[in-house]
View 1: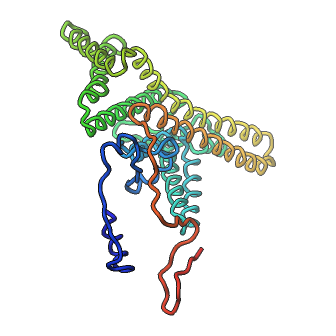
View 2: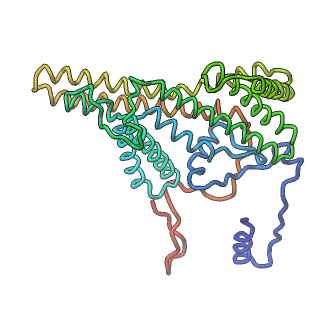
Length: 374
């Protein structure tokens, strides 16, 4: 891909005075992990390459998970922070950072990531009716029981009240966790197929599909009540679960019970989305209660309350943003990567200068060299 530009440069600088040859990596070099990895992603995937490399650089023959963690990380962060006011502040700060990072691609990528995280937080806050907690209904309007707004879309009423009905966010967290875990299992299967490891695909991916199919039949009937168990369903569910367990036992060398227990633990771990979402709103509401109590003492307290609430909400924003980032990242590194990703690759480091705060400008007429500008 890059041979033609290199050949053009060599022809221009030293025509006839070089020998250029190339070859692909050998299977032995790939197997011994001696081939460096050069990541190539689009705009969104490139943004999350540093997070992937923080965990481990992908091997040359391995699926790069950078793109696959982008949307889940953004979505989980937004649901965990879940406040439109905080999201708008993050978007504003990221926009300022974009303007100030003209000559730094790394800082611009960070600013764009912050903007997307702020956008997800704002949309989640609108869904949950949170704007600096319940600042507007409680502190400004003096009606804490009133929602921030009330609207109905196609029969669905908004906003969703996390405090009165936390089970909805609990279910959403589990559904999202189940989807991402199965995405990891699917990527594991793709990786095995690309390496022509058919048995690895059957034991590592088909096994989990069969186990989950059988589990859904029994759980849906016995615990949720979606349907009634009859002889056919019992036979299909039992055979599916047992066959999947046997295949998984071949993959895990008999540790199938520990694998299933670990899968359930990973799935339950996604309920941290609910926990952090509630803590963000709960702490913001507590600050607003204190502010309203001080305002009710005397109107002269209003300037003090404004300053106090600004400080408290900035503190809550920083604290909860850190928690949302850490826990969302943990879901990617532990639960998601644990399904398919190994890492341990060698970074590709070409010859050249990596510019951070300077850029190379075209040579001006009459000038003997290119100039750097900051």
